[in-house]
Length: 128
Image (tube, rainbow, N blue to C red; front, side, top):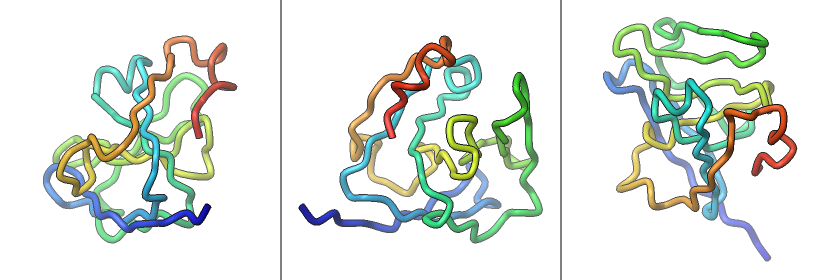
C-alpha cells in the first residue's frame, strides 16, 4: 500500500510561532491524560524531526522542563500556547498540538487515548 503525505501549517494563538509539518494522510493523534497534557488540552501528533520546520518564532519560544527534565515543553512567550514540544517518549522528534494546526476540525485524525498518568507503566504501548 502506498502511503500519501500532506503538508500542514500550524501556529500558536498569536501567530508569532509558525511551523509546517509533513505527515501521512492517515495519521493518529494521541490524547494523553498526564498532568500537563490534560491541563493544557494538548492533543499529540508525533512528527519526525525531518518532517518539522519552524518557520517563525524561534526568538519567542521559551522552554519548561519538569520531572526527568527530558521533555522540552516549548511555549510562545507572547500568548502562552504550546504548539509543539520535544517529548520524553521520542526526544529527538516533535509532538505537535493538533489544535494548533490549520485544519477544518480535529476529526481529521483517529484519536486514541494514552494513560500518561501512569507513564512508566504505559509507554511501551504508546501509539506511534
